[in-house]
Image (cartoon, rainbow, N blue to C red):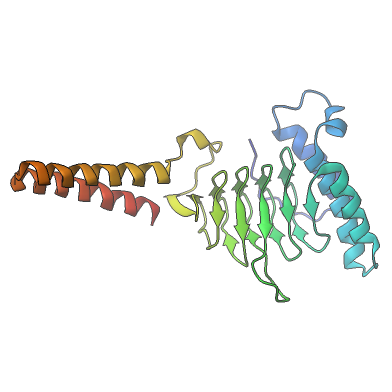
Length: 243
């Protein structure tokens, strides 16, 4: 859905806001009229109010930045700290439940789906929230926690919990998230094609139990060793895909 660009030209504050609106119009197939931008895109409006609050925050204006983001949170159900750093052409799709912490850094051309959390795991001051590099896609419900880095063009599967760095151009899924694919893929993020890690490891355990039960009942050690070797090979391939 999102078109990744390498645009680095200077742009004014209001130009960035205009670009946010244009980004949705250019890249969201669900948008059928301009009026929908004003009534159906809470993520866009949360970003709009964040832009203003962040500008005031950087000018050391007291109270008002937090007040603006607090009001925006009540209206949009998106919680963005005014101190967070968010780049250009970032799109928060649907928006509901998104949380972006104080020291989070989001670079250009990042796509964020609903209920994503960029959270901290420490009460200490300093950098404690994630850095999301340009071109990344964060699936619905993903929790990215701590001072970690999601690399350029990385993809995070829905409902994954990420607590370690994800390299550039990799896909990570699961709880905790594991890298399952490497290499840049500019095609849309197809969650229906992602492997179910929990299901696969559970099926492996069931097959392993079946081999052991057969060994106890038949006493045919030759056939058992062959089945066990085949199962072990499948297990090693599975571990290699998530390592």
